[in-house]
Length: 128
Image (cartoon, rainbow, N blue to C red; front, side, top):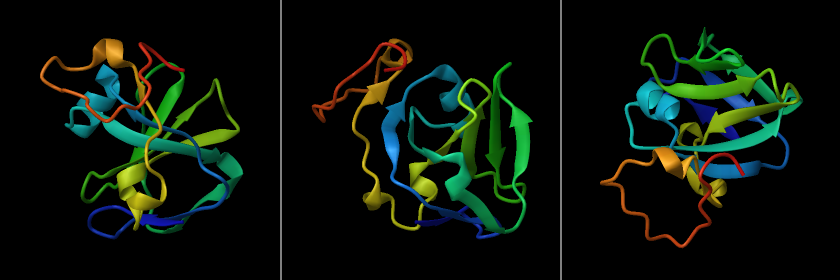
């Protein structure tokens, strides 16, 4: 799977079978993205490679690091030191986000009251 930021400066390849396809409603995802929730999927960390550009990085928690395009701000990845063998990728940074539809909603305890979910996907108060 190929992906990129909005401006195309950062481009990546994601190889391996996706897992943990989710819409995350946690407050950190909302603040970092400026969106009511973020669609993510995971792959083995060894399957992710940046092929052009260099994403910027920052610690979003004591265990988490996020990357984004330093030019346009597109969020790209999340990594947790709790799960060093996996990487989470923003689904909508894929060239074809339809390849990896979400299978659930996580951290719905933080869901905004005005977000009304009617997709029938499972919902989890925190992580799965």
